[in-house]
Image (cartoon, rainbow, N blue to C red; front, side, top):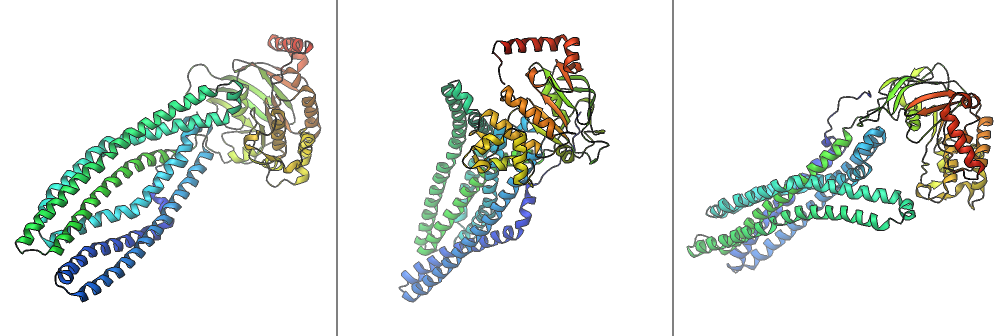
Length: 587
């Protein structure tokens, strides 16, 4: 079985270390801004009590100027707080996203299959953005709300202790309301993200499979499928939003009742000559600030719930250790040999019979070996074990005399050129896509391998030649053109072993024959493993392995297989008969 390291716990706070200075000074700036805000009502009460009621214009002017200076200074503090918090949160988000993407690139295929493409896209975009916003809120609101709450309470009580009775009743009510609603909403945030995963998965499938959808005129079906996923996402989101929306009106009612109570108590105190009008105005402002701070706390609690749901999903990616663990060996006894010894394999998470059973196969340096069999017989699974896309459940897969589990995985894959069944090209020029196999390749080398892959003729016919831009996923090229560019990309690596996984299915027999002849002439000494559906493509191979239900039932050259393998003769007869009738199907 595949070995796996102990799962390591990731602390997201470590991504803030490079921005430690900003995470420290941002709250300090916020403290300064809040303290200045708390001074304003006190100064306003002075203007009302001593200036307006005392008919002293000097107090009004001097205190007004003092307030303006403080407002300007407070504004500066607020701007600096916002800037430093943005630097820290944006940097945090960038670093988490880069490392998460790096981890995804190093995950084994079974792990990326388990996460699903749509979910990984959501985690690397929406979830990390939510965490980024959460960090910004922590550095600002998490500081502002508590200080404004405590400072407002102290300032309000310093004006008159009787105002404390209002707070004793209002604050617990607001906290209970927030607590109950957030307790119900907390599990819903995880559900919302899962629904978004589904939406992204449907979008990804439809964008990548657009040609199939159009070919089968299934646009309406896929639109309905997307509509169902999107409606499910919308309904789940609406349930959360409705629940969270109920907080605002309830807290506003409590806040307005509290303000009325403060005004009523203040009016009694003014009537009793125990307070001035300005002090009541200041108390009203302070109690409003206190209750608004509690509303901010409720918003923060909501953000904490969403942040926790997103953090768990991002951490699941960051904590996922690759199932395929690299070995340390980087040298082999020989070059280009492959051997299977009693190999058994079943895809992870599946049940039932093995995909491959008791595979014994030896490929010598420079040999051309072909693999043929019915769909689902295990051909692609066999070659996937050579590159360690998956590990065998039992037995040994040996490359150059070393078990692939012991190879340094990067060195192992550098020895192998792999042309996949599905040609994957990237946005960029034709030359860029070929050079993708070896970044330091020269223009002359690119042209040479394109000639070997029978691609130079059609590439040269383009207006911009090798500088022709290829559309996303190679949609501007035909299937055969994409396959030939992919073959050139593999050949330019100068690998010791090159694997063709049914990668010439879109070529006509004439072009394929030229390709095979060119490969034999230019890749002498290179071990070639070919998976093919067409028997005409492999008749000239040194040896041909016939796979049936995950087992190699015959392994010999064409002439001997025609004598000893009934399965091979059946394949030959059916295809040659179709060929005679002009009915050969290319891929």
